[in-house]
Structure formats: structure tokens, C-alpha cells
Amino acid sequence: MMRHGTGRNGPGPVPPQPSSWKRPVSLPLPDHPAIDAVMSTAASLLGMEIVFLGGLTEDSFTFEKVHARAEWPEVVEGNTFDRSSSLCHRLLNGAAPTTADAAGDDDYGLAPATEALGITSYVGVPIRDGSGAVVATLCGIDRSSVDVHPDTIAVLEQLAQVIAAHLGPLLSEGVVIRRSPEGGWAVGQEQAGDLTSAMVLADLLAEDLSPGARPPRTDAPLDEVGQLRMSVKQLEHALAARVVVEQAIGVLSERQRSSPRQAFERLRKVARSRGRKVHDLSREIVMSATDPSVPLPPELAGRR
Image 1 (spheres, rainbow, N blue to C red):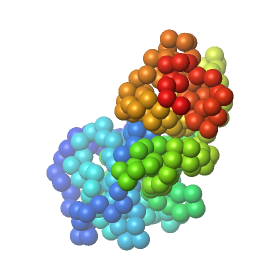
Image 2: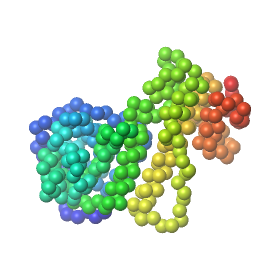
Image 3: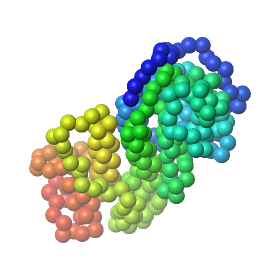
Image 4: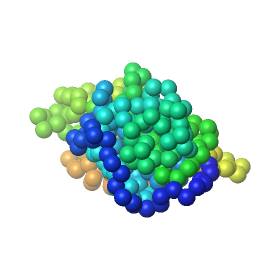
């Protein structure tokens, strides 16, 4: 990745905004630690002034989430304008995923946002839901010229897949078992009458998120892109493992009549005292909800 040219590194006069600029957010994306982690990783990967998630409807584009390394007054969360004015619209219509000269680009130069926002460099990848439909974009922009290598775009696509796994009505909440205000249990947006049913439902919802083997460590030196690839793999593993831990917290909360926070602290304390990994112990707790023969430390057995 190479940065060249001077560009604007600080705030300047506010450029004219597209006439279609409007305020309402069109497609709220969920607050989730996974998405925050991806945004931070993408910012390190690209080195651009702004990394953002773009929300798209048939006729509008919104800066849903913005990770800023420099002030850019026009690029703030919630700013919305016509989809056809955005660079992301050009991306989804077949333009190259990156340009270091947006104004001179045959595709991106036609986007009103290029001039209105003073964009020189752009890179973007689509975020797709389970059906393959585009629900958002993961992008970077800069007011100076930044070349983005194809290997970097490949890592950005991996990060988009991590975000995709945490979008939607269930995954925006995380596959978490909670007490339902109406009685019984809630798993995401679904209801279950008893804990066993809730555990089965959570297993079904989390089936595609079950963690594989932990990414292997390597002693071989890695370049910047290689290090970020490894970070993405570790992030994916950690997020999938988190599902099992949250299930275990739900079991302990019910079993010991405690708050989720208290259940987590007890789980972590027992894991440390016995030299166990929280994830491994959590899996045993989850199994014990439907199989009483699974042995557990006395501190976690509680009321069965």
C-alpha cells in the first residue's frame, strides 16, 4: 500500500452536498463488538482516513458506522443521500473495487459524492446476507491518493464476511439465551418454554458459527497483510467461541439464580482456579443442561 500526493489531512471548507442529502438513517446496523473489532482491523489494514459501513436501500445510501482517523465533517454516522450519488452504488454496478484517483476514474468520477465529499481514493467490498443479497458495504476513503493492493482487498473481503455473520435480527443480538419477560426463555428473537428447548434452539442457530480449530501459530515472519490475515482468523474463532460461552452463562444464570454478570465471573474464576480454558469449560456446562451425567466442578453444578 502506498500513499502519495498531498491531499487534505484536516478539515477544510465544507464542499457542496448532493441536493438529495437527507438525515434519516435508512438501514440501522447493529451495535456489536464483532463489528467494532472489524472496523478497527480494517482501519489498520487500509491506513485510510475513513473506514465506514454503508447501509443501502433501493434508493438511499447511509454512512451507518464510521471509523475516522482524521476529521471529515461531511462523513458522519447517519448522513444519508441518494444511492445513485454514492461510490458504493458504482461498486455494486460493476466498478473496480478500488481507485486512487476517483475524479479521473471512468466509473467513480461520475458519482456526485466524489466531488461533493472531496474523495480521491476509495476501496469497497459488499457485505452479503445468507441469501447472497447485498445488505451493506465495507469501505475506505481518503482525500489523498492511496493505492490498495489486491491482497489487501482479499483480506477486506474476509472482514466483510465476519460482519455478515453478525447481521440480521438474530445475529444482531448474538445467539444468546436470556430470560424472557413473558416467562420462559428467549434465544435471539425466538421464544422457548424451558431451558432445554432453549439450548436446542440455540444449538441450531449457532450451528454455522461453531468454532473450528484454533488458528495455528507460526514462527515464520509475516508481512503486514499476512499478520492481518492471521488477525482475521483469530477474530473469527474468538467470535464463534463466544457463542458457546454465552450459552453457558445462560445455563448458570438459571441454575444458580444469578445475574448473567455473576454467572460469567463465577465461570471465569473456576476456569482460572482449575487451569481450564473458559471456552472448554463452557462447552461442558452447555452439555450438562441436557445430560446430567456430564461432570462439572462443584462450584458450577449448583441446582440441577
